[in-house]
Length: 312
Image 1 (spheres, rainbow, N blue to C red):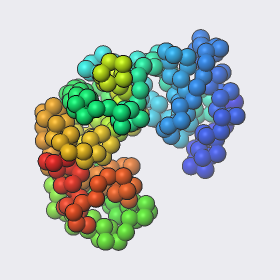
Image 2 (image 1 turned 45 degrees about the vertical axis):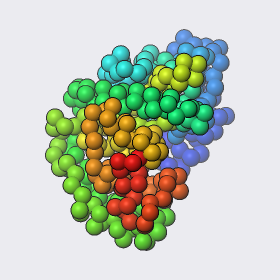
Image 3 (image 1 turned 30 degrees about the horizontal axis):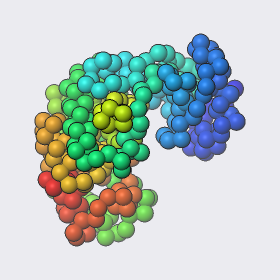
Image 4 (image 1 turned 90 degrees about the horizontal axis):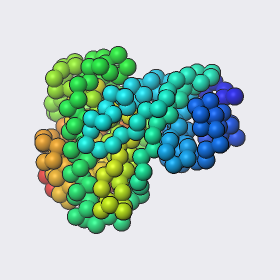
Protein backbone atom coordinates (compact mmCIF):
# COMPACT_ATOMS: atom_id res chain seq x y z
CA UNK A 1 0.00 0.00 0.00
CA UNK A 2 2.84 2.41 0.83
CA UNK A 3 5.71 2.72 -1.67
CA UNK A 4 9.34 2.46 -0.60
CA UNK A 5 10.81 5.80 0.48
CA UNK A 6 14.59 5.93 0.76
CA UNK A 7 15.52 9.24 -0.93
CA UNK A 8 14.63 12.89 -0.38
CA UNK A 9 12.87 12.98 -3.75
CA UNK A 10 10.67 10.01 -2.83
CA UNK A 11 10.00 11.58 0.58
CA UNK A 12 8.87 14.87 -0.99
CA UNK A 13 6.59 13.04 -3.39
CA UNK A 14 5.01 10.45 -1.09
CA UNK A 15 4.87 11.78 2.48
CA UNK A 16 2.70 14.89 1.82
CA UNK A 17 0.29 12.96 -0.44
CA UNK A 18 -2.84 12.14 1.55
CA UNK A 19 -4.21 9.99 -1.28
CA UNK A 20 -1.30 7.67 -0.51
CA UNK A 21 -0.84 8.16 3.24
CA UNK A 22 -4.41 8.13 4.52
CA UNK A 23 -5.42 4.68 3.20
CA UNK A 24 -2.29 3.25 4.80
CA UNK A 25 -3.05 4.98 8.11
CA UNK A 26 -6.61 3.63 8.03
CA UNK A 27 -5.30 0.14 7.25
CA UNK A 28 -2.88 0.29 10.16
CA UNK A 29 -5.56 1.56 12.53
CA UNK A 30 -7.79 -1.35 11.58
CA UNK A 31 -4.95 -3.80 12.22
CA UNK A 32 -4.37 -2.17 15.62
CA UNK A 33 -8.01 -2.50 16.67
CA UNK A 34 -8.98 1.10 15.93
CA UNK A 35 -11.01 0.65 12.77
CA UNK A 36 -13.45 3.47 12.11
CA UNK A 37 -11.87 5.93 14.55
CA UNK A 38 -11.77 9.50 13.22
CA UNK A 39 -8.38 10.16 11.62
CA UNK A 40 -6.98 13.72 11.49
CA UNK A 41 -3.53 14.48 10.16
CA UNK A 42 -1.51 17.03 12.11
CA UNK A 43 -0.21 19.77 9.78
CA UNK A 44 3.10 20.22 11.60
CA UNK A 45 6.18 18.05 11.49
CA UNK A 46 8.16 16.20 8.86
CA UNK A 47 6.63 12.77 9.59
CA UNK A 48 3.03 11.80 8.80
CA UNK A 49 1.26 11.96 12.18
CA UNK A 50 -2.46 11.37 12.77
CA UNK A 51 -4.78 11.91 15.69
CA UNK A 52 -6.83 8.72 15.98
CA UNK A 53 -9.96 9.78 17.78
CA UNK A 54 -9.37 11.65 21.03
CA UNK A 55 -7.05 9.18 22.73
CA UNK A 56 -4.41 7.98 20.27
CA UNK A 57 -1.75 9.29 17.91
CA UNK A 58 -0.31 7.27 15.02
CA UNK A 59 3.08 8.29 13.66
CA UNK A 60 4.40 6.77 10.42
CA UNK A 61 8.07 6.58 9.47
CA UNK A 62 9.29 5.86 5.93
CA UNK A 63 12.27 3.58 5.40
CA UNK A 64 14.60 6.58 5.24
CA UNK A 65 13.67 7.34 8.87
CA UNK A 66 13.00 3.82 10.14
CA UNK A 67 15.65 4.09 12.85
CA UNK A 68 13.84 7.16 14.21
CA UNK A 69 10.77 5.01 14.82
CA UNK A 70 12.82 2.49 16.78
CA UNK A 71 14.43 5.29 18.78
CA UNK A 72 11.16 7.03 19.61
CA UNK A 73 9.50 3.82 20.77
CA UNK A 74 12.44 2.92 22.99
CA UNK A 75 12.73 6.41 24.48
CA UNK A 76 9.02 6.65 25.23
CA UNK A 77 9.12 3.35 27.07
CA UNK A 78 12.25 4.40 28.97
CA UNK A 79 10.86 7.71 30.22
CA UNK A 80 7.21 6.79 30.83
CA UNK A 81 6.07 8.09 34.22
CA UNK A 82 9.55 9.35 35.11
CA UNK A 83 9.22 13.05 34.28
CA UNK A 84 7.23 15.74 36.13
CA UNK A 85 5.28 16.34 32.91
CA UNK A 86 3.38 13.65 30.96
CA UNK A 87 4.88 12.10 27.83
CA UNK A 88 2.99 9.95 25.32
CA UNK A 89 2.38 6.41 26.51
CA UNK A 90 3.45 3.69 24.09
CA UNK A 91 0.72 1.36 22.85
CA UNK A 92 2.33 -0.38 19.88
CA UNK A 93 5.25 -0.08 17.49
CA UNK A 94 6.59 -2.14 14.65
CA UNK A 95 7.16 -2.67 10.95
CA UNK A 96 4.46 -2.02 8.35
CA UNK A 97 5.52 -2.57 4.74
CA UNK A 98 8.24 -1.57 2.26
CA UNK A 99 10.50 -0.35 5.05
CA UNK A 100 7.84 1.75 6.79
CA UNK A 101 7.45 1.60 10.56
CA UNK A 102 4.85 3.00 12.95
CA UNK A 103 4.42 4.09 16.54
CA UNK A 104 0.98 4.19 18.19
CA UNK A 105 0.91 6.27 21.36
CA UNK A 106 -1.50 8.04 23.65
CA UNK A 107 -2.67 11.54 22.79
CA UNK A 108 -1.88 14.23 25.35
CA UNK A 109 -4.76 16.70 25.73
CA UNK A 110 -4.09 20.41 25.58
CA UNK A 111 -2.78 23.02 23.17
CA UNK A 112 0.64 23.42 21.64
CA UNK A 113 2.69 26.03 23.45
CA UNK A 114 3.85 27.65 20.21
CA UNK A 115 0.29 28.51 19.16
CA UNK A 116 -0.80 29.44 22.68
CA UNK A 117 2.18 31.63 23.61
CA UNK A 118 0.84 35.01 22.37
CA UNK A 119 -2.25 34.61 24.61
CA UNK A 120 -0.38 33.59 27.76
CA UNK A 121 0.12 36.34 30.37
CA UNK A 122 3.68 37.06 31.50
CA UNK A 123 3.27 35.49 34.95
CA UNK A 124 1.91 32.29 33.41
CA UNK A 125 4.72 32.26 30.84
CA UNK A 126 7.18 32.32 33.71
CA UNK A 127 5.45 29.37 35.37
CA UNK A 128 5.46 27.42 32.10
CA UNK A 129 9.17 28.13 31.64
CA UNK A 130 9.91 26.95 35.17
CA UNK A 131 7.94 23.74 34.64
CA UNK A 132 9.66 23.14 31.30
CA UNK A 133 13.06 23.55 32.93
CA UNK A 134 12.17 21.06 35.64
CA UNK A 135 11.04 18.59 32.98
CA UNK A 136 14.30 18.96 31.05
CA UNK A 137 16.35 18.57 34.23
CA UNK A 138 14.47 15.36 35.03
CA UNK A 139 15.05 14.05 31.51
CA UNK A 140 18.77 14.78 31.79
CA UNK A 141 18.91 13.07 35.19
CA UNK A 142 17.81 9.72 33.74
CA UNK A 143 20.44 7.09 33.01
CA UNK A 144 20.84 7.06 29.20
CA UNK A 145 22.87 3.86 29.00
CA UNK A 146 19.87 1.53 28.47
CA UNK A 147 19.31 3.45 25.21
CA UNK A 148 22.93 3.51 24.03
CA UNK A 149 22.29 0.69 21.55
CA UNK A 150 19.73 2.78 19.62
CA UNK A 151 20.83 6.37 20.22
CA UNK A 152 24.01 8.04 19.02
CA UNK A 153 26.47 9.38 18.67
CA UNK A 154 28.87 6.67 19.74
CA UNK A 155 31.64 9.23 20.19
CA UNK A 156 30.76 12.79 21.17
CA UNK A 157 34.21 14.09 20.21
CA UNK A 158 33.92 12.63 16.71
CA UNK A 159 30.39 14.00 16.41
CA UNK A 160 31.55 17.53 17.26
CA UNK A 161 34.49 17.19 14.88
CA UNK A 162 32.21 16.18 12.02
CA UNK A 163 29.74 18.94 12.77
CA UNK A 164 32.59 21.47 12.91
CA UNK A 165 33.80 20.35 9.50
CA UNK A 166 30.33 21.05 8.06
CA UNK A 167 29.49 24.21 10.03
CA UNK A 168 30.43 26.88 7.47
CA UNK A 169 29.09 24.96 4.48
CA UNK A 170 25.81 24.23 6.24
CA UNK A 171 25.19 27.89 6.97
CA UNK A 172 26.32 28.89 3.48
CA UNK A 173 23.82 26.43 2.03
CA UNK A 174 21.11 28.20 4.06
CA UNK A 175 22.17 31.58 2.64
CA UNK A 176 24.09 33.09 5.57
CA UNK A 177 25.91 36.26 4.45
CA UNK A 178 29.68 36.18 4.26
CA UNK A 179 30.14 38.71 7.08
CA UNK A 180 28.74 36.04 9.41
CA UNK A 181 30.29 33.02 7.70
CA UNK A 182 33.80 34.42 8.04
CA UNK A 183 33.43 34.62 11.82
CA UNK A 184 32.44 30.99 12.40
CA UNK A 185 35.85 29.23 12.36
CA UNK A 186 37.48 31.67 14.79
CA UNK A 187 34.44 31.71 17.07
CA UNK A 188 34.45 27.92 17.30
CA UNK A 189 38.21 27.89 17.86
CA UNK A 190 37.80 30.24 20.82
CA UNK A 191 34.94 28.31 22.44
CA UNK A 192 35.61 25.32 24.68
CA UNK A 193 33.21 22.38 24.34
CA UNK A 194 33.33 19.00 26.09
CA UNK A 195 35.55 16.60 24.19
CA UNK A 196 34.86 13.26 25.88
CA UNK A 197 32.77 10.29 24.89
CA UNK A 198 29.84 9.07 27.00
CA UNK A 199 30.63 10.43 30.46
CA UNK A 200 28.72 11.17 33.65
CA UNK A 201 28.13 14.64 32.24
CA UNK A 202 26.32 13.24 29.23
CA UNK A 203 22.59 12.73 29.26
CA UNK A 204 19.55 11.65 27.30
CA UNK A 205 18.90 14.63 25.03
CA UNK A 206 15.61 15.61 23.45
CA UNK A 207 17.56 17.77 20.89
CA UNK A 208 14.43 19.72 19.81
CA UNK A 209 13.19 21.06 23.12
CA UNK A 210 10.93 23.81 21.79
CA UNK A 211 7.48 25.32 22.17
CA UNK A 212 6.26 23.19 19.26
CA UNK A 213 6.85 20.07 21.36
CA UNK A 214 5.37 21.31 24.62
CA UNK A 215 1.66 21.10 25.47
CA UNK A 216 -0.27 23.36 27.86
CA UNK A 217 -3.80 23.38 29.26
CA UNK A 218 -5.48 26.79 28.77
CA UNK A 219 -8.31 25.77 31.11
CA UNK A 220 -5.92 25.12 33.98
CA UNK A 221 -3.85 28.29 34.19
CA UNK A 222 -1.74 27.28 31.18
CA UNK A 223 -0.29 24.37 33.12
CA UNK A 224 2.36 22.40 31.22
CA UNK A 225 0.74 19.06 30.36
CA UNK A 226 3.02 17.35 27.87
CA UNK A 227 6.38 16.90 26.18
CA UNK A 228 6.37 15.29 22.72
CA UNK A 229 8.53 14.06 19.84
CA UNK A 230 11.52 12.02 20.92
CA UNK A 231 12.46 10.63 17.51
CA UNK A 232 15.63 12.79 17.20
CA UNK A 233 16.83 11.97 20.73
CA UNK A 234 20.57 11.56 21.32
CA UNK A 235 23.03 10.93 24.14
CA UNK A 236 25.50 13.74 24.71
CA UNK A 237 26.38 16.99 26.43
CA UNK A 238 23.28 18.35 28.11
CA UNK A 239 24.16 21.90 27.01
CA UNK A 240 23.25 20.81 23.47
CA UNK A 241 19.57 20.80 24.51
CA UNK A 242 19.79 24.47 25.45
CA UNK A 243 20.00 25.40 21.77
CA UNK A 244 16.30 24.58 21.45
CA UNK A 245 15.55 26.20 24.81
CA UNK A 246 17.11 29.53 23.90
CA UNK A 247 15.97 29.69 20.28
CA UNK A 248 12.49 28.21 20.54
CA UNK A 249 11.29 28.39 24.15
CA UNK A 250 12.60 31.59 25.74
CA UNK A 251 13.47 33.28 22.41
CA UNK A 252 15.48 36.13 24.01
CA UNK A 253 12.43 37.33 25.93
CA UNK A 254 13.96 39.28 28.83
CA UNK A 255 14.56 37.21 31.93
CA UNK A 256 13.11 33.92 30.69
CA UNK A 257 16.32 32.04 29.93
CA UNK A 258 17.78 33.08 33.28
CA UNK A 259 14.60 31.79 34.94
CA UNK A 260 14.84 28.56 32.96
CA UNK A 261 18.45 27.98 33.99
CA UNK A 262 17.69 28.72 37.64
CA UNK A 263 14.87 26.16 37.66
CA UNK A 264 17.03 23.69 35.73
CA UNK A 265 19.80 24.10 38.28
CA UNK A 266 22.68 25.09 36.05
CA UNK A 267 23.90 28.09 34.07
CA UNK A 268 25.68 27.84 30.72
CA UNK A 269 28.11 30.18 28.98
CA UNK A 270 26.32 32.06 26.16
CA UNK A 271 29.27 31.46 23.83
CA UNK A 272 29.09 27.71 24.40
CA UNK A 273 25.38 27.70 23.59
CA UNK A 274 25.90 29.66 20.39
CA UNK A 275 28.70 27.27 19.44
CA UNK A 276 26.28 24.38 19.87
CA UNK A 277 23.75 26.36 17.83
CA UNK A 278 26.25 26.46 14.96
CA UNK A 279 27.06 22.76 15.38
CA UNK A 280 23.49 21.52 15.82
CA UNK A 281 22.36 18.93 13.28
CA UNK A 282 19.48 21.15 12.13
CA UNK A 283 21.23 24.51 12.50
CA UNK A 284 19.89 27.30 10.27
CA UNK A 285 21.38 30.60 11.42
CA UNK A 286 19.75 32.77 8.70
CA UNK A 287 16.33 31.59 9.90
CA UNK A 288 17.16 32.29 13.53
CA UNK A 289 18.42 35.77 12.62
CA UNK A 290 15.07 36.50 10.98
CA UNK A 291 13.06 35.16 13.91
CA UNK A 292 14.94 36.42 16.98
CA UNK A 293 16.12 39.87 18.15
CA UNK A 294 19.16 41.28 16.36
CA UNK A 295 22.38 41.82 18.32
CA UNK A 296 23.67 45.37 18.89
CA UNK A 297 26.51 44.65 16.46
CA UNK A 298 26.95 42.00 13.75
CA UNK A 299 29.32 39.70 15.64
CA UNK A 300 28.87 36.17 16.93
CA UNK A 301 29.99 37.28 20.39
CA UNK A 302 27.22 39.89 20.48
CA UNK A 303 24.76 37.35 19.12
CA UNK A 304 25.65 34.87 21.86
CA UNK A 305 24.92 37.46 24.53
CA UNK A 306 21.67 38.63 22.88
CA UNK A 307 20.16 35.14 22.58
CA UNK A 308 21.77 33.29 25.48
CA UNK A 309 23.05 35.96 27.87
CA UNK A 310 21.97 36.99 31.35
CA UNK A 311 19.32 39.38 30.06
CA UNK A 312 17.63 36.74 27.94
